[in-house]
Length: 169
Image: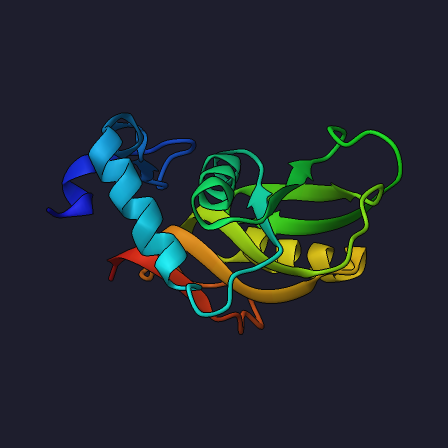
């Protein structure tokens, strides 16, 4: 089975010149989604985290599923204005704008984490999530995405080790 058979490309979305990878067919197919999760989590079988940090919003799907299957809790890296109470935040640039991620500080905020998202493009969001997790007090074990768009140029100083299941060169 090729996971790529379950991913469709939507041209010029969300803006002209950007081609969106729609994971909906993969998520909708129970066997394929389960298989992808097992393959994702297998990257950390020897060093499972205390928490899986999901990046708003599709990262939540993967982090919560990974936590259910492999164990550990879920921590959310949320979009600006969505985190109640005390929090830390990091702003960063996107390939077509800018954004801010936030994380609550009401939890213990100790322990090891793997940062999870659906797709790696420029790496700006993943880089910001790493900074955010460290700022909140977590020890980052690694980064995990379902899809790595290797053909997209990375942001400056992107030096993260990112593990993925699907690669587009």
